Image 1 (cartoon, rainbow, N blue to C red):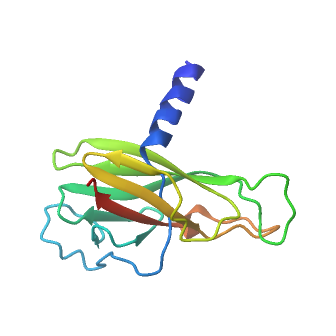
Image 2: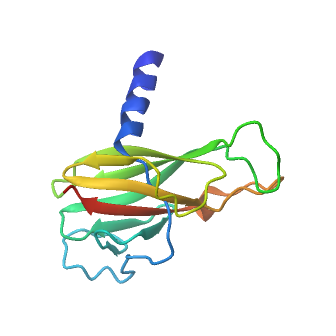
Length: 159
């Protein structure tokens, strides 16, 4: 059973890697003409931010994306000498028009400049997802409440 969970997590991790830029493509009014009840509209090819629990309709598709969970955040804090850079992992939930939910897992290494354009791409339903940033970056001795996390993502069509 444990092996199945690990295999499932590795499969999901290969589906999505995303995070980062400050030119966000989410329309907070959610006026995308979609039948989804999301919190905004994410424009294809424009990096956008989702705060924990927020959803956005992916423009020109019948999909929504939600920042569902922080799986881990063991990135080396700023100003600390670490043996490893660590990483942050997040769970994103993509929902289609039939309300079928798909879970994508994305990771980003610690100690990288953001937006991290070199992060892995996850291809799913004709789209390429990339995690560019997970914020906030950890500080020594400070715990971050999950509600304070945000991710920056970029979604583009597969060419």
